[in-house]
Length: 92
Image 1 (cartoon, helix red, strand yellow):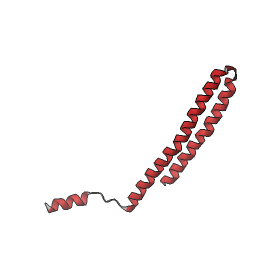
Image 2 (spheres, helix red, strand yellow):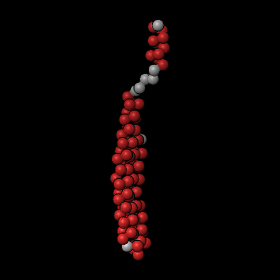
Image 3 (tube, helix red, strand yellow):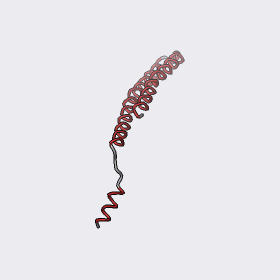
């Protein structure tokens, strides 16, 4: 029985301090990107909703509203891309 216990103990993976640090860095990087994606998601949803409302109220201004909406989406999406870059940098 003792030999079997030694074989099981030898087969168990040993988690080093470096492994724990890497796992902590990966989970914190994922959490950071999750937080970074919340703001742009809310912002884009709000922006598109208000743009659709404006186009419904004044159909003749739909072209200008749509152009402004796409510019706003691009600037808001840039925040999500910055969050992704930070996610990559934290993970390294």
